[in-house]
Image 1 (tube, rainbow, N blue to C red):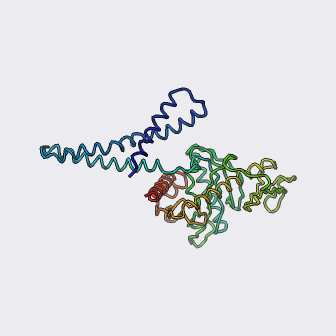
Image 2 (cartoon, rainbow, N blue to C red):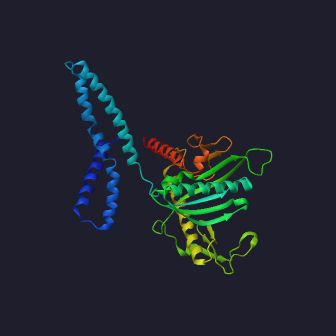
Image 3 (spheres, helix red, strand yellow):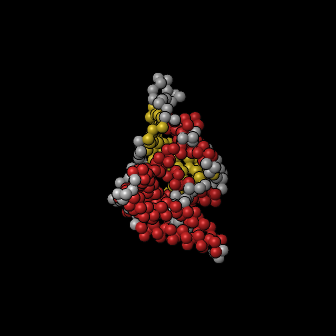
Length: 357
């Protein structure tokens, strides 16, 4: 049960925001912030009002049912109405609880996605390429902007590693459950006996940190420059344009050599490093808060096997929520991706609600 005072404060907040926005006396920046806040509260305000009026409405119906002079037809109608009222109240309560859950400040941020080939040699690199193409297709369908930061190719069109920045609306909240080990089971093109091989790739999704999110002291950084090398040691640049940035306190290190400009490589490297440090700090804080919390998803453990893509059976299975979709090709085309994400989000919300109770 949600305290009545909490709901009344929500209704008052809606009313106050409405007055502020219609006053015409707030500056543009504050107006934009309050407009967003009002929009969020406005989506839930009817649920809040109905939640408050529930007890009054319930008592009126119970009074009808308890009155011996009430005819049977009216009692039947009152019983049905009471049942519908209770059902609606339960839905309102759940929606309000979800709204009142502590918000993850990173959910609205853009994201950096890192995909690396794992066990399985060439087949693992081909699967890493398939995963990256899937995220490219999802980005295109959602009208997100995907910008390549760095890429390391293998033979036959595979990828050893790829890092990209994805920009749009609520990117991190949509992609954050993709972090972990993705496993593929299929017959490689090079397999002559028709045997199914198992390979893996790891995915890491980080909220893209801005300078305001995390202060990095220049004195904590060691920056090394070196000559960029291409495949087989072949020089791709005659100047020392490649950059390695090391964060001395944590030992985190990022190398960047895709650009011909040292300045551009440093900027890209700092973007990755800042996001990794931001996620490291978020994980530390979250671990402190959640010693007692039991969750199946959202741990962000990159060593955790989260999903299997089985080509012979045409299925994709998420092991955290035991959801199997027999539409593997559609999933890789980005068509069934939302169904998986919605199920994961719902499970995470259910777990969060359970931790509140």
